[in-house]
Image (tube, rainbow, N blue to C red):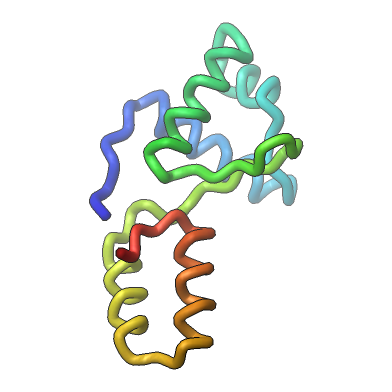
Length: 109
């Protein structure tokens, strides 16, 4: 898994999401992101969010409000640690690790 190339605006969206979530304990709405970053429309926010999800750096739960979660995309060694652990673990641990990797958006295959 390589670190994805992000635009300045995408990095700004991620920073805003992390700061807002840390301060409030929940992720911002699209309108709050729009206001916080001075974007022109909610659809512009949605486009940035969709691009970040497709790049694997952001997770959202469909049809759920305030469900945006920034994933750890900066540390390639995370994938390697998972792969090494998968080589020497029980079947039960493999299921748990694969599920955790899926939640984190890691490519473990």
